[in-house]
Image 1 (tube, helix red, strand yellow):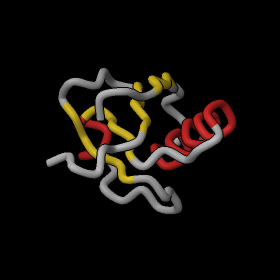
Image 2 (cartoon, rainbow, N blue to C red; image 1 turned 45 degrees about the horizontal axis):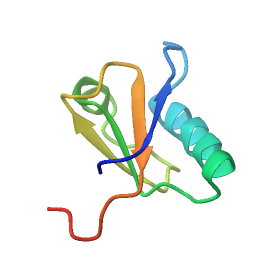
Image 3 (cartoon, helix red, strand yellow; image 1 turned 90 degrees about the horizontal axis):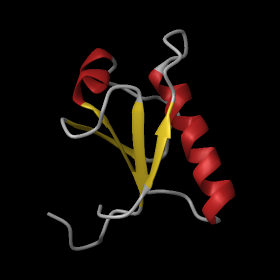
Image 4 (cartoon, rainbow, N blue to C red; image 1 turned 180 degrees about the vertical axis):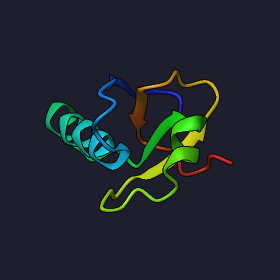
Length: 79
C-alpha cells in the first residue's frame, strides 16, 4: 500500500476494534470507498490479536507510529 489516509486516535480507553472502525467510517465518508487494509503499530496488534467486527485487513507494522492507523487500498499484485 503506497497511498492511504493516516488517522490518529490516542484514546487509551477505546478498544482497537472501535478505533479502526471509526477510521474506516471516516475514510469511507471522505473517499466514497471502503479501505481494504489498515496498518497499525505492531505493538497494538500484539496487545489485541482479534479485531472483531472490522471488515478490513488489520496488519501490524513497525513503520506506523503508536496510535496511528494507515488505511487504504492494497494493490492486487502486492506481495
